[in-house]
Length: 111
Image (cartoon, rainbow, N blue to C red; front, side, top):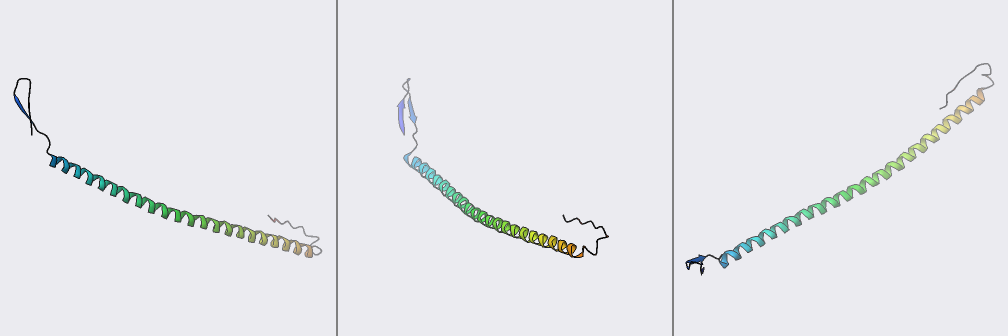
């Protein structure tokens, strides 16, 4: 407690916060800061885990896309091979049967 006098000579009592309450409030503030830092650390850990999981998913998606592209190209090659065989077989059949079909007009759409 602090005592002072004002201009009229009257005694005035000034209360100062006790050292104990000041230290107690500082300790509470430190605890709050530590709690916030702990919460932030947990959040960053969760974000790091999510980033790792998403990285794994992206790698799997990329691998799946590569496999799909390979399969699509192989399928296209098989279809082209089949189409080429089909058209060459039709050509051979027509060439072999032309003498017999000389009087018949046939129209084929090969596309």
